[in-house]
Image (tube, rainbow, N blue to C red; front, side, top):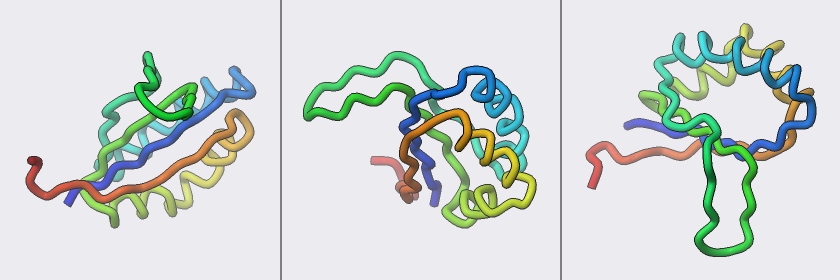
Length: 99
């Protein structure tokens, strides 16, 4: 079953954010991840959620997503993200057969 990493990020250091975006792509691909959105326009339809930058990455499975997050190569790249943005991140299991 696919798994989706969903991040809501607010950039605090634009230079480091650019560095992070360049460094993370090969690691996402290494673990079978595909970007479904990486920023872009966001419209809040209901509630008071006001995200600044939404990133959604589809992985083949929860295990593949966890392997990406736990990859030792991601450690220093993750630190770049932590140094360049504030936000929240979740991992959610997708549907085996879309409705």
